[in-house]
Image (cartoon, rainbow, N blue to C red; front, side, top):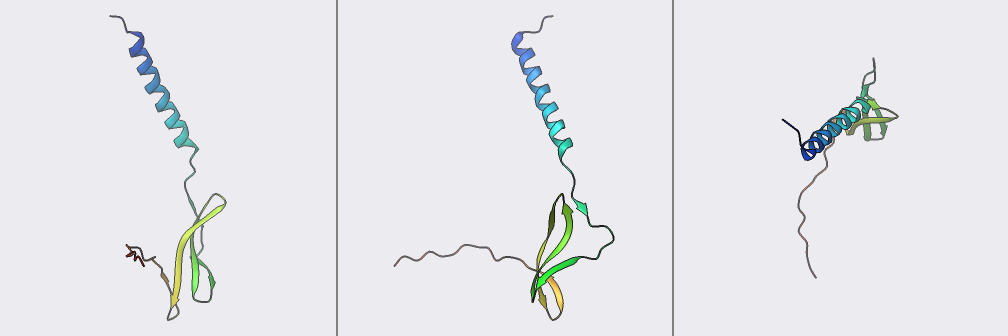
Length: 86
């Protein structure tokens, strides 16, 4: 039973893609939570950014607003807007 050149090419290609995927997955560092800290809010008045964790040299978090002294997560309004022609 001989294996054709085309079959060997397909097997080698699949093996190369699997190896590249494994190597790429190994390069990703999971986000690091900030140990032993309550959530930090960087703020200016009633608008702030709550830091959840660090990802390398960047911080990950949420946009927050202060209502009645309590920080609440903000959500952007998204939707369709009607276009008007004049």
